[in-house]
Length: 283
Ligand code: GUN
Image 1 (cartoon, helix red, strand yellow):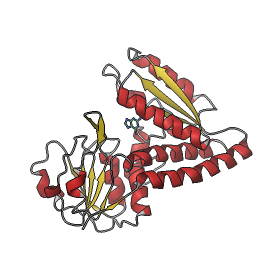
Image 2: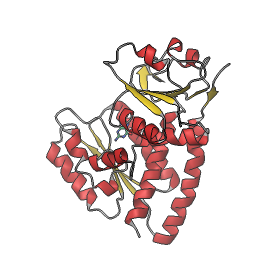
Image 3: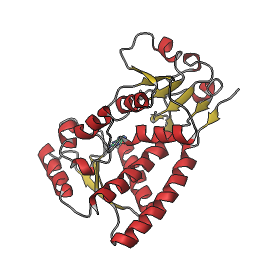
């Protein structure tokens, strides 16, 4: 048996078409579009690619995207001043600071500067805290996109054993919380986990978000597992996931490809969160 390949690109395109319709209606009614500010500090090539994709997706569906490119040598306080200005800008309803930031900047402190109502990445402590409490406002885009894939592919979480590999604030932790709230039994694994394969082999659902190319191999999964690959690793100029797709797709029931799986959904959820922020700010 080979796995069903979840076409994130097609699902994202369908959702974006619906959102385009919605933004057109909103612009008709309110006379101005939702506005997203994307801040990029420095010249990380991968970040430049992500920011360009986000801007293009905004333009496609009628969201005003303001791109703010700042020197990698910027002082933390100057960056926070830029964010404070955007917090007070009524054309901007959503703010995203592309991560990672240069090492001399405290990313946590910068994120806390974003107005909670404009924090469409869902990374502010108030948004992460509300997610933990089960009263979410803005949920980080990648886990939110994966939940949408589960819904559209009718993948049930209730009673399932889910294993998340990776414990980042942006993916691993919020993903685990969301699946727990949907009644899965969740285990989080990380770099210090002893005997990772023995844990992943118990999983009905695996979320691979470790940032290590091809680390989830065929022998690490059980038959008919659902495998979601969040990896975006560059290997010899190619984008590859955290999952050995060829081997794992022979055993899994569902699998997401890289590219064309989770990535397009992350961008789409950013658009969804931006429209949500606009609707809450513009009455
Ligand atoms: N860097 C990689 N992915 C993301 C993301 O979803 N949001 C932000 N802010 N930075 C990222």
